[in-house]
Length: 261
Image (cartoon, rainbow, N blue to C red; front, side):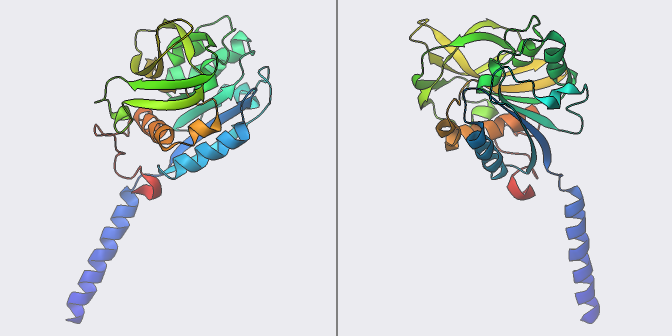
């Protein structure tokens, strides 16, 4: 009996050790944030806590500046994205137009580092004389409608990123970005109607540029939008898709849910 008990204990211990060895390490993410016109202190907290409750993730924050002219110092080195599995961009640096600087921001993504691009990041660097950042995004936008309540219409409901997202989502007091140009690799996932241009504009999409995948949404001007379950669930799925860890049913691959489950 004693020999059998010892064998069982050893078997359980071996299985536990093997599971621990196979369990994925946390996703290493860098959140770049800061700039003008947004409450980035609140949004930083919302994103770090909200994604932490949904994913097996460790988020490093690089938050700098309160103006659109600020150059975040994280980007001053060519290898600024080294060591990270994904970069979350939630920044409003729209007046930074230095070509070399902007191309340095875009370069790691073209080389294969996944990107999650939120709201004003789509308008960041928009005056730069280069398309490199716009190609990471996949679309060009130079302005947005007056802030108002938006109705967000999901497009391909079977896309794993959109699993569980409402078919018609009410997004109060947000900004609808007017899309001027679309690059070929963009896959639209949701749209909203513009009272200004009298046409639909994509508000959620995916893009591939070079070797890198990007998940992008123009939604999220206010922290109140980012705090919603629908928004945080969406961003979590988009992040997993960008790193290739989202299953077809919209759930994380094993080990990538919060707590490594």
